[in-house]
Image 1 (cartoon, helix red, strand yellow):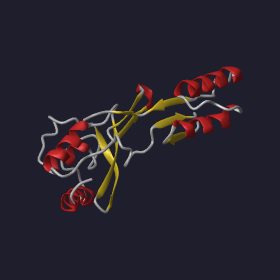
Image 2 (image 1 turned 180 degrees about the vertical axis):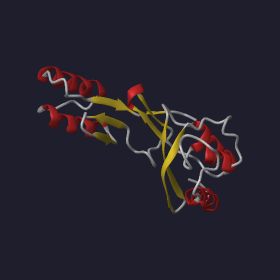
Image 3 (image 1 turned 90 degrees about the horizontal axis):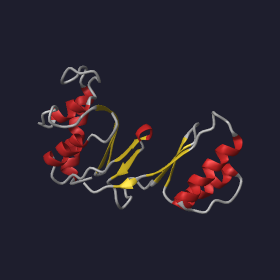
Length: 181
């Protein structure tokens, strides 16, 4: 989010990359490698964390959404170079790496990423804004009312998996922690 002129300028950079037939720099990700964006913005890809690629982007007013697939964590180098190059732009992110237990956002107000809870059901992923929504959803799974606290939700899921002794049954519940930049 930022001043419309700067947001449109950043969007123009993404459109430039999109229209290219080849990558700006040779790499293993292709033309959407984050290092290409860093380079196009005047940064040195070796000095910024940029392990990953852009998977999608869209512009809606003065909000530019850039979806990325990255390795292990938010690639703060990309965020840093954007905020350095476009002083009015504030980059908000939500990062998720289930295998490493990484669930963070810098969107403290929830204006762009209102989801604060994540549940991997083994078959699907579910996102929730409130613990009450989580408790209601989990209550339907386990067949009894679950008190809307993180501890009770976790306990209900653990008990349910234990009762059913099904190796294929899996639930993993997490809260997105808000971090300061």
